[in-house]
Image (tube, rainbow, N blue to C red; front, side, top):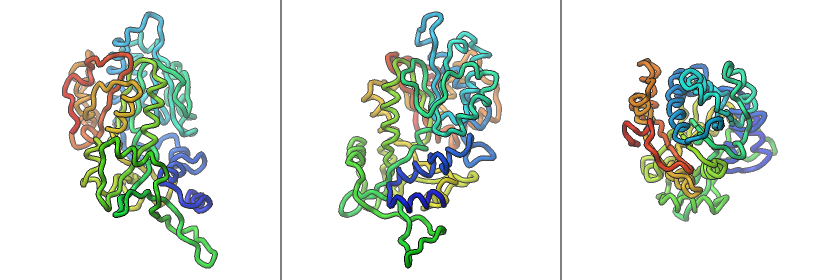
Length: 371
């Protein structure tokens, strides 16, 4: 209940501020205290957890992007992974490049970005034999970079504001501790929520830009952090590509009757929470919400990025498998990545470019479709 005690000290706070504490507080935060949270012994499962095949496929796409960039001999190429954790995905990518594209491997400058000090401390050990390519490890993106940025399941873990439409108009939901009784506050008291005015006019502006209309009683999450992050990343990228992989929906589906209760949820021990489970045990479980891909794409394009494709992970990886000069051998891990109804269709891929046009890519050669 340490996070809950902090909330008691500070008073009611937005859901975004609560998530910032619960996930990223330097001492008590869920992500800050461990270098890795996914996998069989963790709380949730990602594409990286199926084995190196995911990184090997991404390496083929990165190699093509390197070739399309037309860099001169001797030039370096920035590979930036945002939300890198302990660096497992980048390690898989680099090992595949070292094996199949030694020219690109030698030109690659790796930048790992993660908010967790524990994760950053584990990165060099995770990279092992490819740690020589690690150029920076930081909580912030490089000031400038030219190459490819990859963010796998980053946006869904960013703090979100939660709003509710009432008969009187749009309200924001705040997290607070129950009031004291006879001056005493029990440490076992559950956190609760209260409605209040919007903490920022940006919340209504966000919904207006997305073309979202909420009916009375609907709850929804608004990820201002994701919009700010993609804008910042776009400004730092001088030329190259971004590959964003996450689960979520276009705004027309996210802000609709099918998601009228909101999408905020938790994962602990591979079990998804229900109802207000996200209020319980702050700092001890993952808290996540679905990505609004419409708003992310619009923010990217406003900063000069060009949308190259938006598609299911199944089709993205099938394109690489079917067109790569070195396709991976069939395996249970590959099947897990491609299987519709699982990671294959749940995960979406947004590919963006800057100063590079909209070239056909391996990952768009099979079918460009988001289900």
